[in-house]
Image (cartoon, rainbow, N blue to C red; front, top):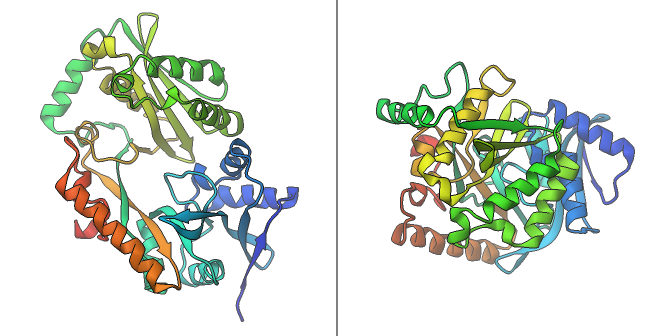
Length: 357
């Protein structure tokens, strides 16, 4: 007898919201992007009215959740997660083959599915259960285990250079980390101001020049403020760099950063990251995720990284072949036009696991 039951919910009530939040507290893969708060933030920010939530129960206990909306992926109609994510969008209490089989079998019935940033452990299970699923590698995320010394994996030369950076102007550079007990809206406006005068602005890469991006981050602070951490590096009393992060459970995820171009001689990005890591020692954080991208800057701090994959599924083999052909073109582009000072081109759009690299 199947001990699991999956239902589809199209309108939330308080009881289910409470169940979702309790599941998040105990789930093996809990992150901000599969929390109720992120769902609410994204739904209200983009005025999403139609959605489906797949909810799996073991007896009366909620054990898995996935919220999806109807969209398109390279022209093919799909169901995809509600909201942008940089970690798995489904929430599941434990990783177990029978549970994965039941839950995802119910989701893909007569539906095309596209999920972003699925972790490798889940991919291994899903590939064994559903060999027709397609998993291109979409992100390589360097990470640092905090411990007593977050710099212990740095090379001797990089560590020596970092110490020089930290000693330089040490009396005039100050780092502060603000959480939900602070006026986060104030520091959010500070972020907007810094980015508007940053090196990103000079390269037309500043995201806050667009009003919709400003509003999106304002909504994150409004609905997900308990997860938000804003770090600011000051030169004397002038804020010269920011680091927008998200902290959940024992993980700190670096999400967005920039510094004033005129203060580049102080190496503010590296200084700010080092000061932040020092501040996290002794806290509840055990893992610092530097986010997607194998840049030289991140690799100075750590040689460790983990992979995230996109998931494509359709019963229509022509749709799958179309997705695979697009992925192949994207892979060739990575090889022919690698981005300078990164290793991304070695990984992106392949179908290898970390053990095969």
